Length: 273
Image 1 (cartoon, rainbow, N blue to C red):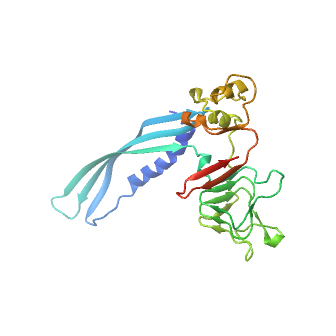
Image 2 (image 1 turned 135 degrees about the horizontal axis):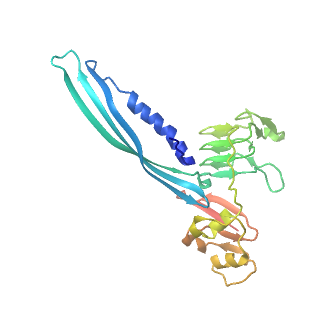
Image 3 (image 1 turned 45 degrees about the vertical axis):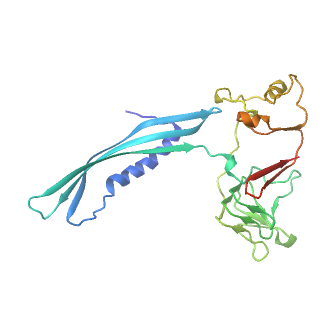
């Protein structure tokens, strides 16, 4: 018999096999006068649900049911004392695709618009994961309170105005970043969505059967979802947030600058000009 599993299921199986082996083979002999043995066990998938959005699997829910029958036998006793116990239970879990929203900062190309380096200085503090598919540059004592990773195996250090490229976490004594949870260099790249317009449709709360088109929406479609009068011209320059109530995001027409910060209660604040 040949069994085919979907990709997410293939990731679940090794974990559960390890767990099942542990349950079935690691029997603690808590009493030296008692011998424990397993008479029978079963481990089966009772429920599996996959949720697809945008043509890919985003979430998988699963439930495994197990039954274990054990026998405990008291040794050096006459007559022999035995006790048979059957244990049943279930293991439930949910796997979700990683979301870019978990990052405090994520960059595919870690450069300014003019191609110059982006320097993390002593004025910078990040309280969430930070990742780049390129290379970071540090000056003085920037602080990172969560995981930091880069695909590059080296980093630039300001070195008093004479930048150095090192395979190191610091350039003592001039540039000493603080990494509360470490700095991983040579990390795997995190690929951006392959469908160019997925994020645009999501910002417009455009979810027909959770299947995003692979082509750019027309101005007519954009104006409709923004609640503007019908037409085939670009929406007026501005920031549109009306779609948030419908599960969408923030749509910006025209050039803009965005500042990320937080208020006195620690809530995220986005200032878009």
